[in-house]
Length: 266
Image (cartoon, rainbow, N blue to C red):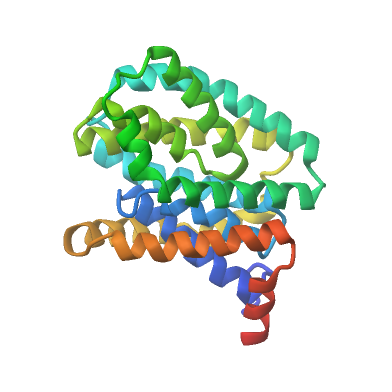
């Protein structure tokens, strides 16, 4: 390891590089939700709260690039409905984090359950869409789904499912759907800085690590845009969701088998 690099293991850097590139790919609109793997993947190599805190600035950097492409293409009504709920969800997520901070097994269990639940949601997505596509969501649902998204996003940067459930029945154009999602999470991620800062999770010692990883946000977004043009996302999503499911199981079981395997391999 070079002397000027932060003192992290090779396994950490592999996990971090994969996580940040996945975030960028997801922000480009390729492989819906694949960025959710980032926090669980990082949680295999470091405490959950530290993993989430390290990724938050990188998410915000990715948001800046993504918002530049969709700043004029989003549904304002939905944003106005979901954001107040998101603020409540973020506050509750911060309280949850604060209560269980230091109880690593509880946090790992929570992240693992969210990971497995996300995969189950994706597997059942077509059935869910079929059940909800012919109904018009009530405005109150926008607030409630925004709150759920804010809560789960605060814990694991994984707020996509409730947003999808609320937006899909509205049959927005693909551009409006992606743009609304991007704008919503850009605001949400920015607000999440408040509870993360108040809990002491945003540490100066991470700045160099974040600076080294930040160019990968742009690379991931460009890669996602390229994949959008030339490749089908079906197999890519299957691979990522399989990895997310395995990672979630490892976090739930607390065995760390994946991390151990990587340590032995490297």
